[in-house]
Length: 271
Image 1 (cartoon, one colour):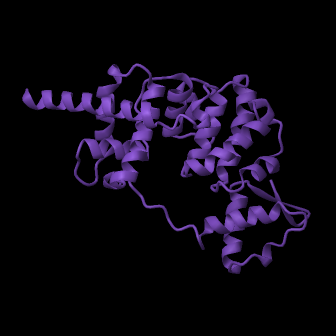
Image 2 (cartoon, helix red, strand yellow):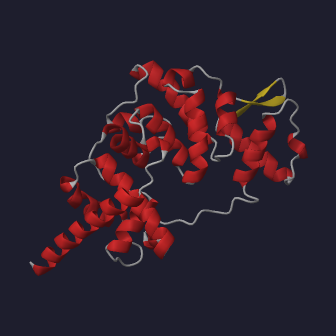
């Protein structure tokens, strides 16, 4: 009984600390925090996958200015979407987002659906992204876990190494009935986790799902990005790129498999 009381008290203390930090120091300036437009939330979540917030902010503003609605994105050329996406990396996300727009127009009347199962059927939308759209666009109360949330939970509720997400999910599940706004709670929790990282280090490394991101320099990801950037020029010269021929060929083959580039009249082109 005493152990349960201590756990409840610690949970209350945690919620209070998170919300107080957010009230004073929260990243209220983030543009996707200022909208409830489900399409804009979809764009932000696609951009934020494996990409730092500071890199996303200017790209988000530019993207929404050029493609303010699902209809604008759907009728655009993929080459235009890719040109704007340049610099964010993981260019398949641009392709997924462009395909999402087409599906939303054809099957959902241009509206991002509320239903999680339907969201999961969209290209590039996985478990986390579907939940994030539910939380931030529709204020749906559900468990949401990403790196900053892991950091906050593992730091405040000391855990052993290899902490499974199921354990963290159970903690969040307990707290949800006490949360008034899911949108506000998870914004605060992410900001608190980012603060903990800066002050105490990345506790999410103790998560069982933690994976260190591979080096970008010299990777196939870098070569793929360079190929795509070169193909956006009037007279591209893929063979002149400063990479080994074998790596360029691998990158080109991968980009073709992902339908990001195609061959027209014997020449490579943006799909």
